[in-house]
Figure (cartoon, helix red, strand yellow):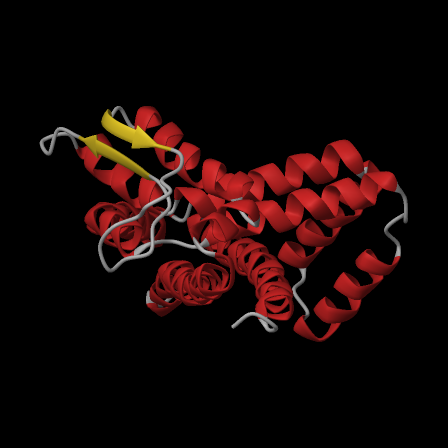
Length: 254
């Protein structure tokens, strides 16, 4: 078997990750600018304080998981400084001789996407368990047999079948507040790139080993690409809806 499928799977894995991350950064930076112009910095906090806290806590949690030392942390800053648009920060250091800690930079930088997705899934599981089960079934069925033509129809069916009650209202409120946290700053992306070479080498070595020994790593890698694509597409859809909402709210004031 040629090694080309491994290369495509590896490129897809990291291409999807950073491609979606850059789009999310651009979208949510625009939202911060519009909210700031319409309502001041406190407007951005009102429309996204939960996402902001989850964003920073995700960085901090993964930093601790990868044994980094947190030297400074603020969940909220009312007067951000510098050209980059930030409303909180986590500063951490690590042992550059430790491969584990160096590799952790990749996950720490991208942590808010993981953390915010996790909070939304937990909220869905607690408030709308039937919809949560339908979503999980949909995701795993698509990883087994992906059909992009049916993806939009499946998502629309999922949304249409959601019960209209107080639990849905609470979930949508959490969704709106959490979506703000998906955006990554330039510092987040730069930090994740520090760990990227180590992740690429690890995935590459596993791919070479599977090419020689055939322990089904390629099949797992392809399924991971599909799962990542589906999850990031849902995250992007949420962020686009959030951006449209912010546009409608701020349009009379900007």
